[in-house]
Amino acid sequence: MSDIHELVSMPEGCVESAVVRGSYEYYHYICDGLNDKGWGCGYRSLQTLCSWVCHQLNEDAPQPVPDLHQIQQTLVDIGDKPTSFVKSREWIGSYESCLCIDQLYNVCCKILHVTTGAEVQDKALEILMHFKSFGSPVMIGGDTDCSSKTLLGICKVQNDEFYFLISDPHFVGVASPRVLLDDGWLKWRKLEDVFHKNSFYNFCLPQLRKL
Image (cartoon, rainbow, N blue to C red; front, side):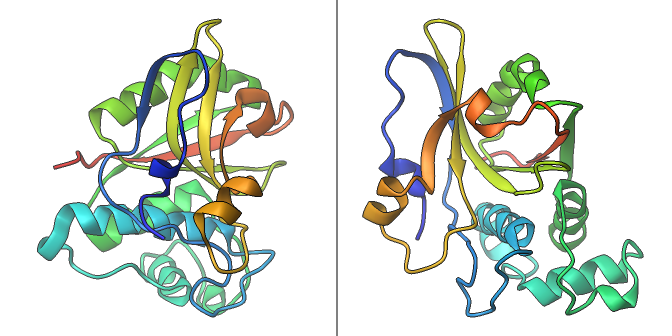
């Protein structure tokens, strides 16, 4: 599925918001037939970001969205991982995604780090400005909370709380608007419903502006 953020209405009381701009595809567990349940969420989030980059670069994109083994080989080729990493089930996070996007597409990414989930509140305006300035989707990875997520937008409501539009790559099955919305795979979520207090987080923000 493409551009799934368009399926969701803004939260009630929204006073300022910004969402992804430009087309992309939603990648999730087993979407290409490879069974990556339990370890592939970071790769799928990276693929979603790569699809956005490919759409922006259009015919200038040096390659299509990489598969999981191509991602692993890229990290080996640049010296970040040992050769045993290829065809393994080892996870990747936002840092590895940043390296891959730079290597594959010559697009730099910014890593935004917070030491606890509670600190995301202090970075919310910076994330909002990212969507306004660049429009690219954002990968979120953590340590204690090791479930990668894709951020498609952010919304500030009247009481100065923030909602985050989260696309969950852990979905398995045939994606449809009804399934994604009814089962919560795509949803505006409060900060405390996304970010754990006992986990650090890295945000991977591609620094390519929407054309």
